[in-house]
Length: 365
Image 1 (cartoon, rainbow, N blue to C red):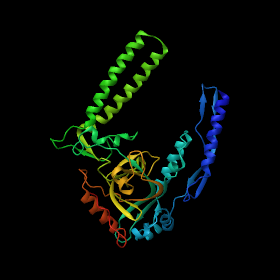
Image 2 (cartoon, rainbow, N blue to C red):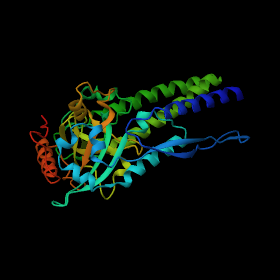
Image 3 (cartoon, rainbow, N blue to C red):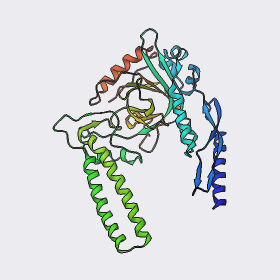
Image 4 (cartoon, rainbow, N blue to C red):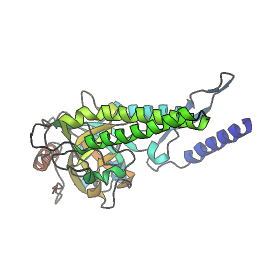
């Protein structure tokens, strides 16, 4: 066992070493020592691993951002001066602090997952007074959300549920006031699955009672664990699914930001603009996700950037997408209005310098 553990540890450290030589071109590295969280075996063995981790410096120049997202400064000419006078947001450090804590616990991320954000900048236009938060990232696909008022059957969510992380709710939701809105299809789904699982559990319990072999005792423990998890999920989702409607990733353009970014400055529902390859897409912040991840867009938004995007395919793997959030701009929550998205984001972009010559804001259909 000692030899096996030694080789596994050695391979793990070799993997880290190999990745350290494969940094993205934009990374200006700051290397710092790292002590991994201690592991022990039965109280008699304690292992401490040490290493060096690379934290990227935030990009602070318009020229560097232009290299990552070619055409950005021509698409939004006012950004150059705003970036020159902008400041690095504490959210950038908080993001990489959270990532490093994950690594300390043994979650060794792929380089593209670790280096998924090149900067977070606080901007403010001196003339209009309009504030904005700009961050540069990649884009993964979010398929979450459900709304029986617009998609009422389980089959409507077939593509969304192909994602292993699908959730039927997102943070942006509103009260279900219409009396003719059908029930959320996931309510029946969860009830049916609990019923099926209860029947399977009963059979396993009976077999474990009749046959005291360790196999059936193990099966019983496994079923108990899975049934408890299923009931917990259902109880968490049920109140929201019964009383509220939410954004749907296949219908609504929205982005997901780290949950630690939602604070007095940034709110779920705030308007945002996504800039990629010379095009600008209006959207809102629709959800808050893990503290260690940036760069996530709804399926609707993802497929606008890359038609091949799906529940299992990201639209943009490189850090080359610019996200501009307008803090404190959220409207009262209701069924998404694409006309309002267009009008509001257009107004906010005008207040930070406006669009470049012949550049048009994307119109959602």
